[in-house]
Image (cartoon, rainbow, N blue to C red; front, side, top):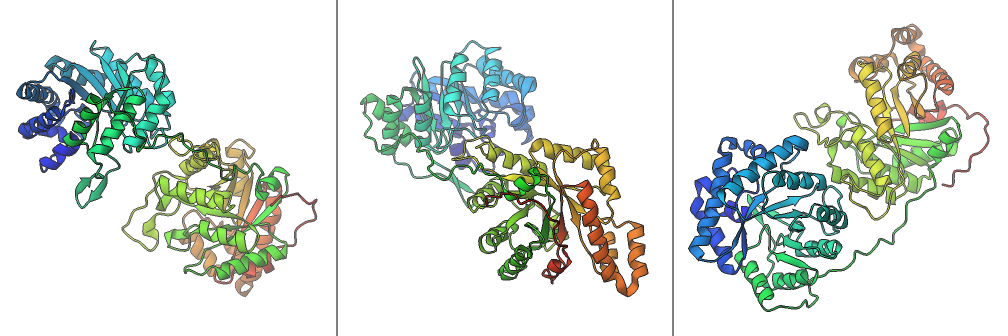
Length: 592
């Protein structure tokens, strides 16, 4: 209904507005489906609840739109002279949940029943509890039959990770007239869901989209599913126990006529629509073996990493050469790689880390910011990195893009660093962000950033606890020039670190660069006594920078689990000369 009305009537704020602005078009759509053989038509009220209408400034027309939706369906029935059922269509509210949502569902159901619907279609839900709320709310104001429908992907799961099997078990308990699948990825997806929903006494319904929609300019277009294809779908749906068979977005009267014919002829499935159990992945299972970083931290050994910036160009040769030199020096066990620092576009830190691990043979800790990608993009990147053996990931929120190459633009940030850690924790549990099962669980070792010199230490402490609760396993501080701030922050959060912490050390070699970082770089604080030490050194500032760096490394051994050292700009190989020889310690079996 919505797709056809939106195509037929220009400049609608929402399809339901046509009930008032273009009632003849709504009647025409109903008549077309009835003449094609439909036994049941749905009112044009799917999104006619107050919250959704309010998004289009139509909340004052709530009753008028719902009343008209039923009246126009009844008018079409009278025109055709066929005794078809009229279903009051009720869709989800969006983010609204709980008693407030129940009140809205009940409100719409009351209006629809008062105008004369025969049954309710509560449809296109992905959250099972939200659907249960809607069913209970409608039941509180009406005794009419209810058909409850959820929307599933090709694997038989909703966007919220609810399996068709679990949905069926819950909906059967609610004792609705029928339940099943609508909307979704097309007929095959609906059939997969039905196969999971089969049970003794179950009354099933299948009303899929024609297929996945796409955009052509300003128009929504659907695949060209032939009527014969829908006839085969109807035959297979009946064989799976469906007693209500129809269509959703993109379905035209031609597809409904094919379903009608398949039912009348008692057509048997030919098997041309695939309904098979999903093949289980035979890929590599999650590596239970911990990373070298995880092992060393668990053993209480002081770890050292070197922080490198990825290149501004497409060649990683220099980066890999530096990583090899760090590995061969034996002075650091890891390399951590920034992700577009200061929001300037560089080679991906994740991709650079893949190259380092493959060609330099040293374990990496790539930084990753959710600034530049959607959640699905982050999932894809993480799964690819995992497949290449990269397990340690430092989640950072990232600098705003206007600080870098793209002033006036905006970041994506569907999640922040806390959400990114939670995403990795979910992947480790074998599910995606929405709770849908993935082929095999991952084994990421997530880290987070923490700044003991933040302007708002209370907020920083609160966010640190949130990161740990989300699943962070280690932390790396902002660059520090005095460890007093580290001690003070540790006391603020309870006197001990909840996860191992690596201290950031930057042996800056000039007074000018030190002052610039203090004044111009967000998050970096250089205490006055350190600035005075550099000033007093004059031409010996380089020596002072090295001495201070070594002092911080030594002090970090008493206060933290490790340190990372920022390599000098443009001459990262010089960091090898600065790093001290590691203290003698028993070897740890890394297994990597």
